[in-house]
Image (tube, rainbow, N blue to C red; front, side, top):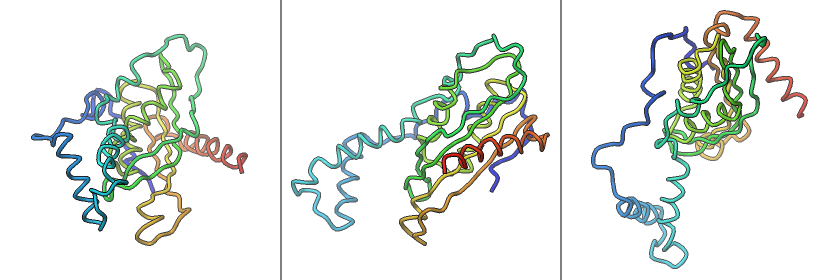
Length: 219
């Protein structure tokens, strides 16, 4: 499954790259959110007033603040600091096995796995931890795996302006593994290739082979 494979977008800046998502009008208060949790507890058939559940609404909202902190963050800021001393490096940089957890926007259930990100520097490089940070910014929002893949690639392309970008995500979705068809262990794979990775089959094959070689070595 490919996620939004597209040509380079030089000169364009996607809305999601340099701004945080705009809050909705009349956003509920924390007290209203906690009341909603109590209503859900009652809906599933338990008593929100019993001792073990009295503090649950506060804990749930605190957990949501952490799990969805990406709504308060700007992706471009994760890539803001770069370094110019890269000569004579001319190949791509690959960061493998970036663990992430996100939540499906259809069921609000977790999907989790690994991201593999590569880019071909032109004039500047970014700290490797910043790429992992970028993945986390987008993952900590309600997502589809396809959109998450595309957003990561687009942000790297538009901020770093590299020669090319490759992103591969593989994840297990709990909305499929523990509900519905209930088939655990199924991995969903999405990719996005921009620039030289889009234009060069050789670059795509090298990227995928390097990712797969590492997975094979672990097994």
